[in-house]
Each structure stands twice: as C-alpha cells, then as structure tokens.
Amino acid sequence: MVLFEDALKIVLSQDFKPGVERVALSEACGRILAGDIFSDMDMPPFDKSAVDGYACQMTTGTSQGITPSIDRAQIIAVPNEKPLLVVETISAGTIPKQAIVPGRCSKIMTGAMVPRGADCVIMVEDTESAGENLVRFTLENTAKNICYQGEDIRKGELVLQKGIRITPAHMAVLASVGATDPLVSTLPRVGIFSTGDELVEPGTIPGIAQIRNSNASQLEAQVRQVPALPTYYGIAPDKSEELYKIIDLALANNDLVILTGGVSMGDFDFVPAVMKDAGVDIFFKRIAIQPGKPTVFGRRDHTFIFGLPGNPVSSFVIFEMLVKPLLHLMMGSSWKPLECMLPLGVDFSRHSSARKSMVPVIMKDGVVFPVEYHGSAHINAYSVANGIMNVPIGTTTLKQGEQVHVRLL
Image: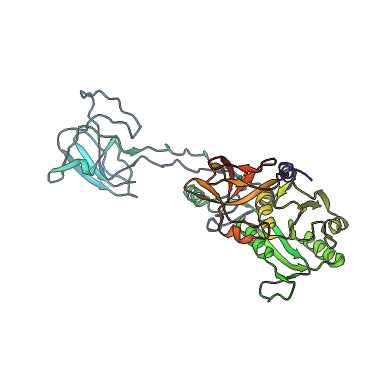
C-alpha cells in the first residue's frame, strides 16, 4: 500500500505527448491552450479617453506646481480657467479632425481617440456651459483621464501562456489580440465501464440482489467536465474471459481507461490479474486513503488504466484526486486544484487513523461543516457537499475552530 502523496507522484510522473489542433474561437472555452499567445498590437491601440468629457490642454506653471504624469489617479494642474471653445465632437470609433491648442477643446466620449495636442480630459460633470460652443471647468484640479497607448499591453507581449485552461476572461484576451483559431490540446479519449454481476443499467428496475450502475454516469460527467471525451463500454460480468475482452478493447481505442469494481480482495475481484494478462504494467494496487484504498493504476504502451473501487464515493473521490490531474497532464495543463485552509465549525472524530481520510463538507461563511456521511456507498452526501476535507494519517479528532485543509469541488 502506497501513501496518497506517493501515488500522486507516480501518476504525475508519467510521460504523455498531447496531440494539438486548432479550433474556432467560439469553441475554445474550457480547452487547454497548447501554444503561447502574443499580442498583435498595443492595448490600448491609441491614447483614448477614460471618461465622457472635454479633451483640452493643461495650464502650466500654476501655483499648484504639480508635475504632469501618466498616472490617471494623480491630481494634476488645473486646465485653462477661461471658457474653452468646443471645436468638434469625437465619438468612439472616429478619428479626430481638429488638433487642440490653448483655449480650445473637443467634446469626447469614453473610449474615443484623444486628439493631437490634448493632454487632459475633463469630465463632463465638472463643466458648465459658458455660451454657445463654450464650456468652463468648475473645479480646481482634475486627473488626466487618458488611457495611454500600450499602457496595458505592448505589441509582441506574451498575454496567455500555454497550459492554461481557457476561461471566459481568457476568451476576451484571445479576441482582443485576434487569436481566432487558437492552438489547443486534443481531448483525451476515455473508455469507461463497470464490473459486477449485481449491476443493471439505470433504466432497468433492479431485481433481488441487484443495484443500478451509478458509477458510469458519474464518471462520464466528471470526464466531460475536465473536459475529455468519454466512451461507455457497458457492464462487464465477473468472468475473467469477458473482462479481458473489454479491457483489451478499451485499451486499444482510448488514451485512458477507467473501470469500477473488481479491484478489492473478494473471490470475484479479478481486475488486477486480468490487467496483467492484458499486458498492463501495474504501478500500484492499494493507497493509504479512505475512501479509495483498492485503487489500481497501470499502463499499456501509451494508454493508462485506472481500476477504481465499486463504491460510488470512492470512484468519485479518486477521480477528483488522481484521475483528473492525469487527464490535465495528458493535455499539457498546468492545472492545480483549488485548496484552502478554513476553520472547522464543529468537533470531528473518526475511529481509525491509519489512512488519510477525505470527508465531504459544506463551506458556509468561511467555516467548514462535515455533511452527514455514512461511508463510501453514500454518494448522496456529495450531492450537497462543495468541498472535501483532508484528515491526515494519525489524526482521529479535530476540534471546533481548528484550521483544516479543504479541496474545493
């Protein structure tokens, strides 16, 4: 039996060269970026107004003696105190026609190009009419209110690194630099099946001593969420010959195979032996974790295989903690789980501390509360949980208020 930390190291030490493909920008969200993205232009591409107002020149040599700065938050010298003649109106997307000289200004909209000669935009609410086409500044000081060309991004600058999972915010960056067909990693093909003579499909009414197969539906959903491409191979009976056929078929047609059941110590738990017969090199068969102890991990050629416990909580937790990191690795991703330290809302205890325990919890108002949990068959506990609490080996009790490590779901 290996420690979980050692099992994770084994999983993440595997070599796998992901395939790559170009996809339309509209299909890129959620995919793993396979190439660095550089800006094809300055951002902003020109000096633009940060407010609706009037573009003009600052008064220099005033009693304030404040030096002009490109920092928009810094207060700078007062504009010309005399009324300013409005020479044109500049809307966003148009090119100014008039240069600004002392005593003149241009009415300008947010995001519009600042005209030549202007080094300040006074906000419209800080002005008053002084006659036809004349405005007067009503305050003593103002900020520059100009977004300067290239102050956010310079042309040629790296804006997104390969290995990230593309989010809606990344989509905006891709669009802004014209990356309309980003290079992404191909989605791993994942074969899924369950084992056990007691299993029937969800649409079947179970007979006596039978149960519905919930693991496959759960794993398919978890795989799609990564995202990867699941293929379901059905339910394999507890017979070595039949199990060998489906393992061999799934290994030949996928990048990763996940099966549940048949990995423990029972008389009909054939999976590890059949894996070996199918040419799988097995790296570990048991992990010091609860739930999920009888987890098998191996590889045949370029295809990985996980044999997960049949209990649904075990398969759910081990997928989150071992299978998901492997799938991201297979796509060249730098993904890391979201984890935090939070105070425990109640006292917690367990009977045995020989293994790391992963406990479903609800995080509410920055405090952690274990949910009602009856063991590794109680998948309903995870329908309300939003995190998994880590109880280390050797720890049997945790006190209210104690800081605990939580992995967010």
